[in-house]
Length: 127
Image (cartoon, rainbow, N blue to C red; front, top):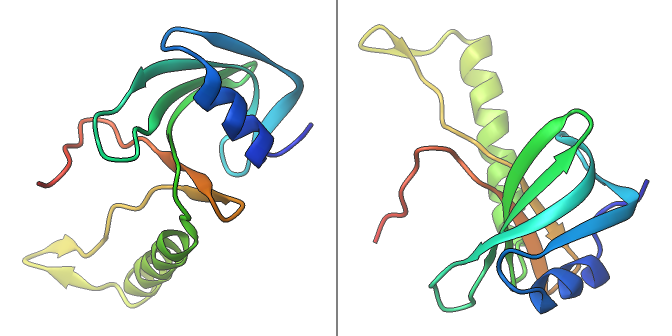
């Protein structure tokens, strides 16, 4: 098993939309499982042209955006939000009777030039 690497990212960016790569050895994405294939589902229209990837493996599937930018800062902010959620649960914080919680998702930097961002279902980008 291997973890995502810059070489993996390069291979995905060289693929055409619809291409599927066999992942041998299988690729492990921390917190999501082990995957044996990845399909480039689409190319997004934003400035850096991220790729929408669909990973498949024995335990299921996952969707991530592969972005050509350093995601280290974003990953640290997401860890901070996860810690806030933990503390709010611990203190039983509510607003108008509803527990306070921020929706978090995985951000996995792959070196200093790219990374994976978990796709959040039924979510829209703010413009």
